[in-house]
Length: 507
Image 1: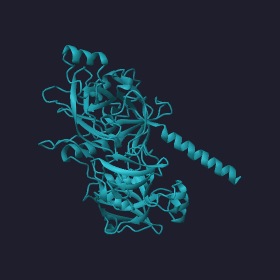
Image 2 (image 1 turned 180 degrees about the vertical axis):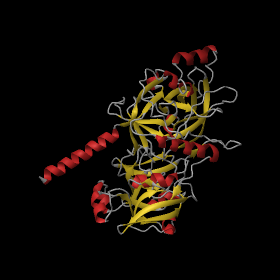
Image 3 (image 1 turned 45 degrees about the vertical axis):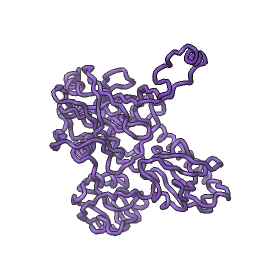
Image 4 (image 1 turned 60 degrees about the horizontal axis):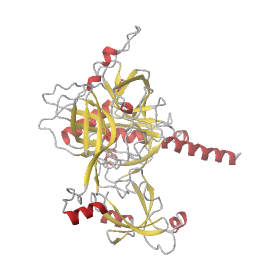
């Protein structure tokens, strides 16, 4: 019985892994395996701030649920929003060297003095479309809300060219104002002054309820502006599609979402934006009725910070924890298996100063229930540095409320080679056996985990041994962090694939 049970658990784990591998971004004309791994905790910035602060406001009034009449059409409601929905196309400049001259051309040049083709030894450039997505105009000056993965290449860098097409067929070139990899939100801008741009209304997604009617709008499969309908299937979903350090609280919907819908709006029954369509769960790349949207209240917070401050400042408590299981709840005398158990507190951290202790269970922040560790990280990140928060905890079976002043997230990266996308360990006998590393590789640092967004992803396997960085021996993870050059080419000497070789990486 134990053997069968263990086998069942292993099979179940494999199925869960397969399911997560089949959660696909709706990007371009084909569904891609999820590959977002956050690179910067504070959000990326690529443009300057406006002269005067902009405010992207949301309507606080919830949708009217009291109307029981039978609707025959939503056309008038959708007319409020569809003109403000845009298609976004990205392109990269591909540079190629010309082929060598043919024998015939060489003879014509040498014996008849015919001038060679112009620039026949210079690289040639051509533009190649790399992505397709959607977005929503949320300000008359031309600010457009979309997903980060819509306007980025497969390494997370902004696309070289971004073209925006409006519903009325006008086209504009857009520039990236900023993006946030932890939420997959981006804000881009076209020149909107004097162009009479349509602008969408935003509504507070905190007023949504499961069962509310919603619409997904975008340009799926590049067929043109398309509207699909469904309901809110769930709220606060955390499914791990943004990576270990992503901040997720998705709206789940069964409104049909397909490749090309990414970045487009999820709209309520009054034509207001309540979310940004981001991903689908699918084994085929097509819609199966499980779509995920970043809620508008989170997206607007990110956009306000990116546009006005140039970065996203996130609150920080300085704790590590885990989910509360039914067994832990019983052992700690908790009323329900809900909350985040605190396992470690950093010295001098806001949590320590506020009175949090190891083995406290945090169950709410400012009245918002904390379901588990991911939920605690999400609510903490929404606080501003310096903001005071009411934190409900259980300690020794008794409930208490503490006041904690959120700090700023430390700038330094802890534990990762390239922004927490790899885990590193000094080579030891256990790792040597685990990864079958030969005896002649005496010293080095083993890469024990590689995230999808890593520079190693798809090129080097886990178990790669880094021997040197830029000519300096790597005997510990600290040697690598100390000698790596961020944003510049680095020469690594590694053992991988049964041999020692060198490669260039740019983190």
